[in-house]
Amino acid sequence: MTYQEVFEKLKKTIGKGNVKNINEHLAYQFHIVGDGEGTFYIEVLNNKLNVEPFDYQDRNLAIDVSAKVLEGIFANKVMLQDAIDNGSAVVFGDTTKVSVLQEILTKKVKEEKKTVKKDKKQEVKTENAELPPEDLSKKDEKATVKSESKTEVKEEVKTEDKKESKKTGHKKAAKKEVKSKK
Image (spheres, rainbow, N blue to C red):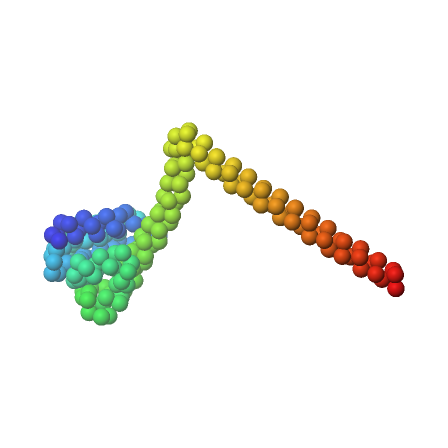
């Protein structure tokens, strides 16, 4: 992958992010090493998230990491602190800001999951709304057939129950007769 491809993929992953609760100015510079080598930064300023393909001189934290590990971090499959601990990411600067970055990334993933669930619900509603009238009638036919078959099954069960109760009723009557004869 080229640097541009890696950057665009990561930028799309982080998107605008939810940084409404972060009231401080933060700047994280990432230096991708190996395949797709290059530098970009993430900045939180005035409750907005900016992701740009440049060097950031006045940063809080610089992170050297491979594109593969960085994709895992951005997708929340790899915790940034774990990558630092095992040596797959190297940081320079104010390491207290690592947890804030992880919080930003974690919120982003949770928001995406909520959005995906909402989108799936809307797709189902949209699919039904977009069905041509003949398809809707087929759907109604299927519902009618199902309800008719349920009714038939219920009627069969009721009929069998009546037959069974008649049999047991005759047995009870016979028992009463036997008792009365004694």
